[in-house]
Image (cartoon, rainbow, N blue to C red; front, side):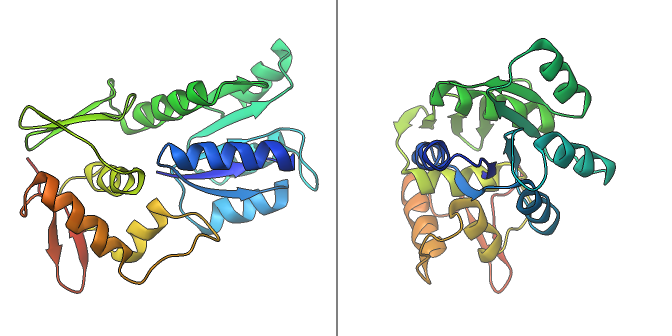
Length: 219
């Protein structure tokens, strides 16, 4: 999953980006409201983590602008402003959840997954497909009844493909899901992770449409 982190505090932003990347998210980080609005309207993200007290453009104004443009990307407000009036204003402006600072990173990760599940119309955290059972809340997985372990980027790539079985994702689209801005991308990175996943799930689990991209077939 690709997350847009909007946070002007350098220490907190770095900690959140590092922690979420360890959880398998691709995280891009901007530090002001104008940059957030530009990024959100020019690139594709699965979710935005939005602080309210931002330079150049306030977080609430960013949220209102995105919703005015009919953008449905889920937004979780993450802020030290925890007064009831602030929460109500954020939720009424179109936020999908509201997390107060300080927060636990594991809880934030769980809230991200929960918001995305609701956005996708899925009531539970468990994904089942072709013998694979994947719990997105715990990142535990089994295949044909046997436990299987994925690296963070293997997991992120697989999660992207399982979001829409039957849909083809190009190499560039998959790179966006597993790498954030500034991370070095090896030329054959996607192929390497697909190969590793096929070794664990079977050669036919992920299909390659030559010159187009990759997909998992519909069940």
